[in-house]
Image (tube, rainbow, N blue to C red; front, side):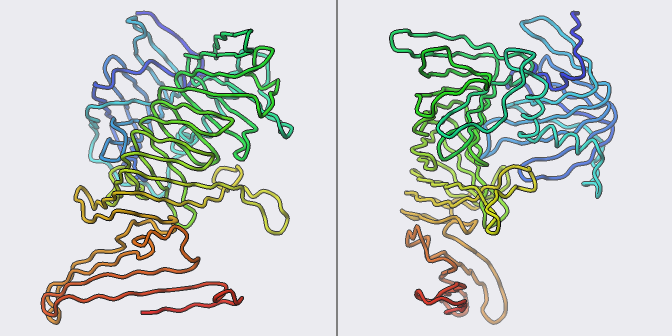
Length: 475
């Protein structure tokens, strides 16, 4: 057995991933379990073990997030684990056995097979979570994890300090950091005749592009990357030198890609992106963007998403939902979807200074989102309940077409099926009047027959252009 001892600073070293067809087996002496959006959260203690194929881990305590595959989610299960206390890991690299001993470790397991949990009957979510949970959340948060990695690992020159200062207008900066503990190794292939430079990185990379027009910063993480650009000298990936914002720059990425623009996040298997034109193509992609009018995310999942502009996307054979669950109970499936997600920084109306998101400490972003789609089917659970040829909405509402369907029974009206539809969406109104809501629906009552009606509510700061607060209901 070949032992490989690593220092504590490398507690999130990226190990070889076991084959995805192997099941993930998790066990512990004690457990608490609760749901957090699409994830099952398991707080484990006492001889915590995780096994998948030839890899096994053991620790005193652990926090585990389980995201199971489903109709809308990934085609494989995801287990995200934070281990703490006497961590011991057995794994193989290139057929040779290795060991890792540390006090903490953070990593992920992907599986197309089952996720098996063997614990005593789990307790519910604790009213006050222990400190290990806060430490685990800090590791799991993508922005916190990136910040930690940029401090621990220096690109290329171990003595260099990554540049983080603002850059002049009209320039662009490239910064490459390791995705794991292997330093970034870029192979450059120059073409002196055209001054084109091609870089190939296969060790796992986090590429940050500052100075992208209208976006600011693009943050990309991938297992492998190919980059095309131009210049008289070899481009700099340390952030020390700048290039003009008009310099051609294209990237191709593959392998667990995470692509961020503002607070929009895209997960994909493969991505091509033209930085200058802010266009590209994404395969097996899952786009998530916050919706300002309610707590939630709009999630657009498709085999192919094309970015046709800075804030415009086209998706084919797509599922769209605002559900926070992995297997949404309510979703829209469409053949062609055109999605616009306009992002703009939030500034204080009093001082003009940028406002910060209190949860992240970064620049707050406001979204204006619209969707237009064709050949739409609305699903409730696994059952299609409604078809409509066209659809348009500004995503102020977390539902599509059907606001409500309800069954009731009483002695006066008998069995009752009551429905409410969004008439603006049925009419394909992409830009409905602000502060208005218009619903209608047919009802069926077994003792009275069919019925129906419509309700228009408004709450606006003007009435046909006349300033002043107006509110009312037409029923």
